[in-house]
Amino acid sequence: MREQFFNPKGLTSTSANHVANLAKEFVQTQKIYINTLSFVGTNTQAAGHTYITSCATPHEEFENLIPILTKISQATQLIAWLREGIKEKQAAQAGILTFEQYLADQGIECPRPVRDSYITREDVVKSWNEDKYNAYLTAQTFASVFGEPIHPQGEYSIARKELSQAISKPNKVTGEGRDLTVITKVPTYTVKEVDDKFFELQNIQREQQAKFNQYEHEITNAVDLDKATKDAAYEKASKKWTQEYANLYTQYEVWRNAEVKRIADLKISIPGALVDIYKEIQGLGK
Image (cartoon, rainbow, N blue to C red; front, side):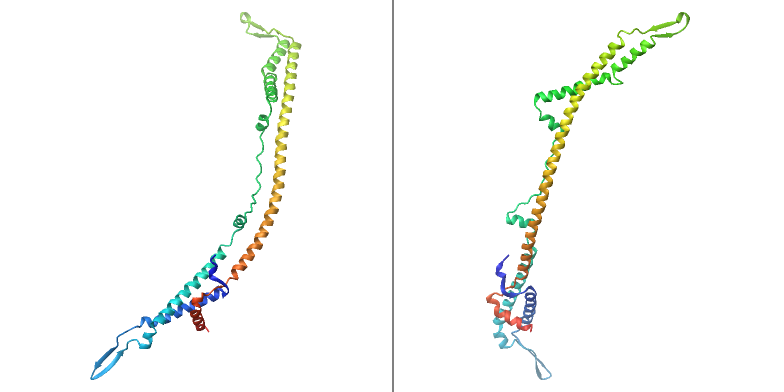
């Protein structure tokens, strides 16, 4: 802001605007003398009489030409000064810093907290050493591979059912007479052998599944703990930031209100060179 336009003993914006309007009227009035300048008079002769139909500019007005132009110049200058002072004050009011600009001007930083990214299940697994990772893969693959054939629809379970059916109904007869065909299913393994192997496979699968579940549980706990920890840290930081933000905004409001009042109280000065013309024009409004 250009401080040269303001002085504690100057004019309010309303008064400055009023004086500028008076000065404009003053200029228009003074220009009447300039617009009517004439250095030639006119005489008209008719019917034996001579009539003066127009007169040249009187000598006293002619002698006052420079003072009149000087006053017009000074009044025009006063108008420009007052208008520019009003604009400068309006610009100062419009240019009051926003909250963000105020913080930057004061060198204050108040960034909003950012929630840290959560770790994923893959991140947890990648953090394990080679032995643990391989143990995890072993449990996963063994549980899957051993579980597949003993699943109710798995190959071993189907073959086990076929053995039971072969023992209970070993023969199948098709056709009649000479076309009679008897198909006999001969169990190669005993039910005990098959069942023992089934339970052996089942035990291996359950043991590996239990290990795999433990690893999965560990992964879940790590992910949940990471999320809970980061959420708690974010909430704490957010509460602190909210309070700091509120305090800074209160500080800004105090500054802004003071700045608004300071600018509102600014008075537009009258340059020393224009004091005389100002007093003359001001007197016209009384």
